[in-house]
Length: 44
Image 1 (cartoon, rainbow, N blue to C red):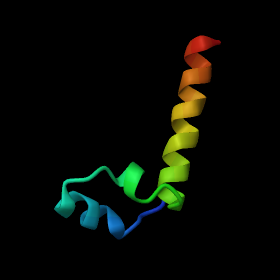
Image 2 (image 1 turned 90 degrees about the vertical axis):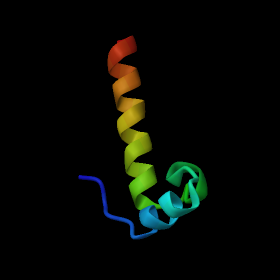
Image 3 (image 1 turned 180 degrees about the vertical axis):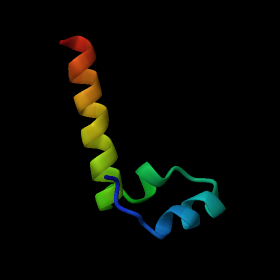
């Protein structure tokens, strides 16, 4: 499950990528792990 982060709205209001603005967010870390797992499965 991806944790909810209230700062997502802030990044949308700014028009800036959430992943870049808040790289230490638990939500971002979870998404990045999912991406890494998908990449590994596709290469696999």
